[in-house]
Length: 337
Image (cartoon, rainbow, N blue to C red):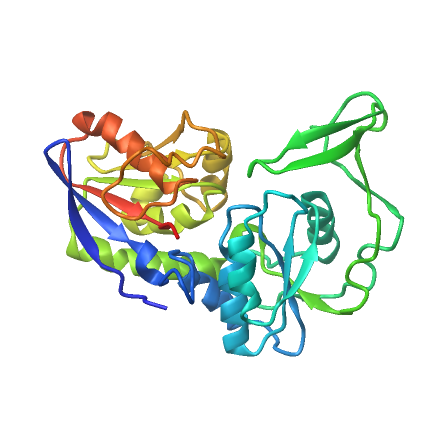
């Protein structure tokens, strides 16, 4: 895993743009070309090697591949959970299989129940993610969650989550609950398990991102940061380094601007930042016009760039670069394989 990834200069509409090549953290063979792995590995330092780790990797995510390798390096049994789908990327599964992980088909709904039942890492700095699974998902049991956003008639609907993965929910008009049926006790064979927080949202993960970004911004005085975002967790650590101190929660006019390009809901990003005490007029979140599934394969980028997230952010920069005065840095989180 390469931690000291380079910053390159690339030309875009006759403007020099700095590009942080975090896609070079992995070589695309042993590890995915993905800049999140240093933070993920920091989280693994806190796990107990005597218990397996389970993680759901949605289609298009490299988290399962990365965790398969990193867990093997640390002697941790890894359970690679993924949603059942004919279109799931078999290439990624083949890469992960080299590192002796177990595979489990698991719908996003079932993973959500698992998070609710055994919990995840808290925000108070605690480092133990170990929880009991013996009371998690008993076979053929009905599990309810108080999600008031799901209100409707008693029909089964197919919905799509923020990652574009389809799933079914049974909506009930009264009470205002979402009802989900669990078909089997899929973790019975493992007993106790460990989980990482959703989207790796833990202070230790964000701290690694912040520390790495601080080194970049010490060397390069940047006016505009452009970065993609899904959940907003990864970008929040980098924004913390870009807008240090009082600038993180300020409405005062600032020459610096952080431009966050997301495939999810704009408010999701703002709320995530707010939860980490980041809220500034210097932060602008824009939703890409492209669908999550659109890999933008016909759009050329002068460096390896992930079509799900980063390629869409580079397209936004190309469309808006004339409005950005000063030096620009594009943070490329992922490449392609």
